[in-house]
Length: 191
Image (cartoon, rainbow, N blue to C red; front, top):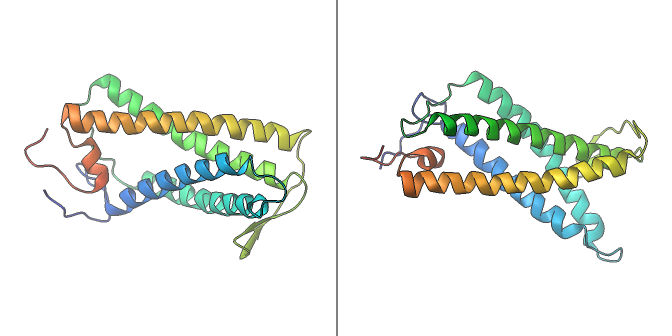
């Protein structure tokens, strides 16, 4: 196993910052989905009825800034070449899935902002900073943005599952370095 990783990407390997951003976003998105799924059924008297949404919003705002940084970082970095074991179809599907992930995440975060600020109140991020509200920008903003947020979150999670299954397929069936490159090492004597 070769474990030397640079900060920046190379044509063969993701750098440690790209790897860190990938896993930070992945675990944050899964955590936000789990929190959102759990908190929608809380009754009014549950103390988490206020704390859950506040935590969800705060983490969502931070994720937005991480995603902006991730897009900038991605645009200035080399992209490791696809492995020779990847078919043209897999390459195209991989590109489309990543495009979907970025688009869906930004739409989810914008919808979350629209839901949270429709009443004119700012979003308090861990009581440290306030994200200004523009109020209700269109009729039924909270309900429409809420519906998009909910159904897009479910769609995103289904793509996350497919993405994870594809990585496992590459690792265990194709026995290539697709997964290990995003874990920070290369398996030796493997395609």
